[in-house]
Amino acid sequence: MSLYKSPYEGLETPALLLSRPAFERNLSRMRSKVESAGLALRPHVKTVKCAQAWLRALGSAPRVTVSTLLEAEDAFANGVVDILYAVGIAPSKLARAAALVERGADLTLAVDTVEAARAVAAAGGAAGVTLPAVVEIDSDGHRAGVASGSELALAVARALKAPGARFRGVMTHAGGSYACGSPDEIAGMAERERAAVVNAAAALAEAGLPSEIISMGSTPTVTFARSFAGVTEARVGVYMTMDLVMADLGVCSTDDIALSVATSVIGRQPLRGEILIDAGWMAMSRDPGSGRHGLGRVCDAFGAPIGDLVVSSANQEHGIVTSPGGGAIAFDDFPVGRALRVLPNHACATGAQFDRYHVLDEAGRIEAIWPRINGW
Image 1 (cartoon, rainbow, N blue to C red):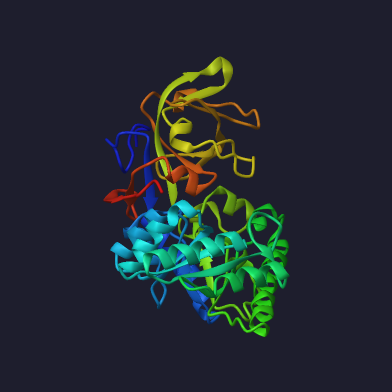
Image 2: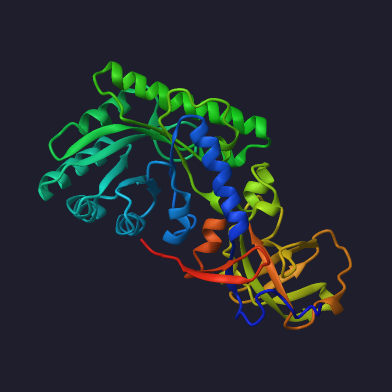
């Protein structure tokens, strides 16, 4: 077959590809893991941002996690009522959140300060609705949240007992798992995550504040967790598409990465050992991931990695492909127009550069176009 040929010949590049077979395998594997453990699955839509995709990911009880109110509105418009907004809520967004609740959404917010909890209650009262919220627990020192069992956690929960708000439970996210060095280390982080949120719920229950929701989740920790005792639900998102960061953590293989960017060779610089493609940082993002693959790993049109080639650097519309190991590149194998794919470091960041997926079937042919939503 000519190197110009590809299953999606004629597709204008760069374009976002989604392998349906790999995507569906990822959904099935995670659903089995979570539901066999007796947990509710609350998939996070922030990676795919596409109803045609996340509707396929729902567990036996439809519920989702979101990171933007646009995602929440999209979920509600597509029939999902039970929505957890898992980012600390900014006061400027509360009127919009209240409007969604007024329309019938069962929207739960997240807070980790007394100030935010009071703002939630005030906004709910002003709108004539009740805004439920969970207290975010810090289980890894990575980002947001309050210490498990702390007086601050109790104060935040109590602030949600005011008219206009309702304390609903606790959540945590061990984003520090992304820095772990092995599956065993991730399993240890998962236990730390579980213990933090379960102990927080126990302390609040002892103070007269029982938790309806005890929520944990990241794709690495849920994948390698050895126990979910005391947890009610798992929140996972990037598992749907996977990416190179997940592969480097041992969460998946490169064959499980369902997301890639279709690109074309637009030039060669043999003296510099470089191939130029039309997927620059506007297509790939500048997320460095683990730092092992430049801005993405280069594959042929069917998704098979080509040696150790990576997009080592990029300008806005130019991707620079090199061999980081210094291996010789057969430049005659990369004529202008040759179709390639690039596997992303971070699926969320790369996906955000596009407004649609070109969905591929088992043979790598385009079988559908699925629109994405972007924005807040």
